[in-house]
Length: 375
Image (cartoon, rainbow, N blue to C red; front, side, top):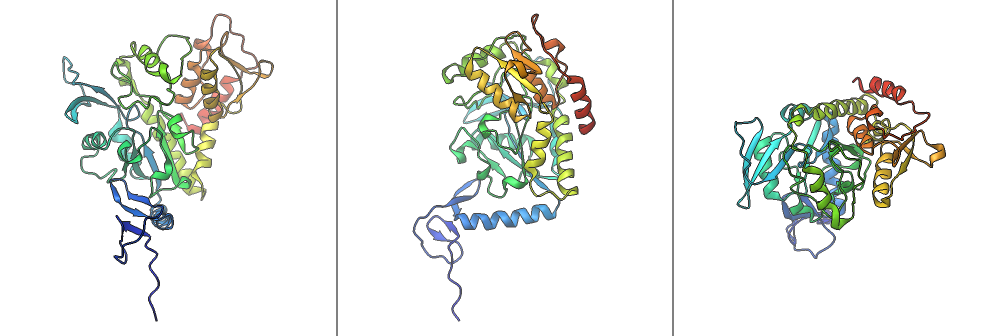
């Protein structure tokens, strides 16, 4: 009896790993983040992913993809020196260039807690060398992330794609990032408040896509999000954001609490698609509230509209609105603060002198969301 014909599903260069034969080029996919030569067919990738998924779910874990810059740390070019030694400040070199790193408060507890219930992945728009230097700081023993790290050096893109995380799939993966646009607003995503410690923006800024404004700035000006203005506007915003108050940053605790609840809900209720749970939690932020956006800059208005609807709000005309945001309404930073706090925050301090919001039941929504999240 003849042995079954090899499908050549895994290749090292042009050689089949299983049978050793040289095979012609077909559509192949990387099977390791760091090895561009070891590839597999679509069928082979599916088989590998199914095996990893089965093992992951058997161990009662989900996959969690974590961004680096302004999510778990803030990086600044050069070696910034301080009068005294501050906690969680590190100096590294990438391609012989000095960089100062400030880790986000409570990062160690955040990662160690989540590693018990999630398989942790890193996905950054920084280079492989940059990511390796960061991992030496946050995971020197490779216990947390192992080799599960995707960088710009492998993805060749200023956008992120969950399908490039080959051992994971959309049904069992949660993402945390300070940017939604780089993920094309996929349903696996939770936004976290951008962490900014230095007078500098994102060291790996993907300037081809739009930017979330700094909500700490006391200004009600609209932000020009056109490509050629992004860096100018972003730098202008961040001139005033050297933030000693950021050491009071509790955002990792907030997202940790939510991620624990998602994990519990997925396994306790025997769910098959974590995206439905993630979407439900996101939708509770604005909870179907009718919001009218009034901005002169249509590009910025479209950007805000996408975020509002991504978090469960409805963008309507003025006659149907519960809340008006923009000209003669609430400051747009109310939108971002609500998103980052995962509840509609008190809007009194975001009112303009001429604001006229009607039928708003913000306190009722806050009570409902507080009960759900146990704040």
